[in-house]
Length: 293
Image (cartoon, rainbow, N blue to C red; front, top):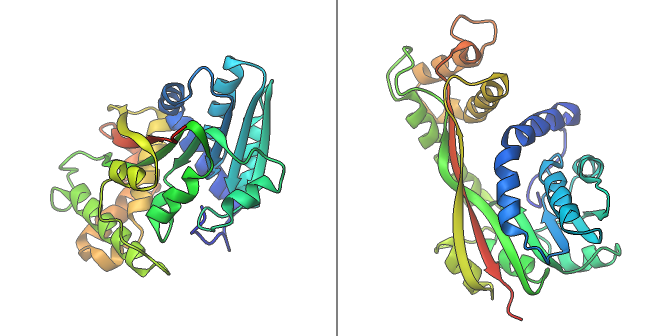
């Protein structure tokens, strides 16, 4: 969102994957939103639409608190906004979608000129800020969307997701650790090659304070699905392995790539989706700062 190109995307397949991911983590995100939304909060701006799973949870939570809630969902992709708007519809909650870029200094103005609320009690941005060239400037931009006394919540990765046993019986043990190391290398390369990239040499809570917020704090939530996984869990584990396949040719020994391809081949004898020892364990962190009154 804001830093991605949405050209040449198979939107039907992309939305299907996003919806499946939303459904898988819905219980965990419901708890996160329940913790963030205070009883008196009546307005939320969500930055980054996804397929609308989080927007639907926010709208449902707002509706449970009263019949005058407002939710504004912001993204650069019209297809994602349409999906989020449809999914987030809830009685008693006004849902607006705004096509705008979180990397643009005109973000607040773009939201306001649509008639949507220009500031909210809660501004929620999950896995967005690390895609912005200047992350601190991005936090300051998001902080301007927060009402005095309101809060900005930024979700970022905590611990890398793990789905495989340490020894899967193919190739050398420790495949997943090597895959995750390659993924981290990919991420750092992506950041370094981003146009206008600026380093953020500090922790997120410190960055929230630098962005003008107070009472900066963090909490983490665990996505813990032990083996054996159900069909939904196995699909999530396969999506994780498919993501790790990205750029694997450049960063891993050929033997590891061959094993990973066997795990991802639904017609092969070693297809990971047929294993009963897959699990899904991940931790993400929510960083929260308050706008001074």
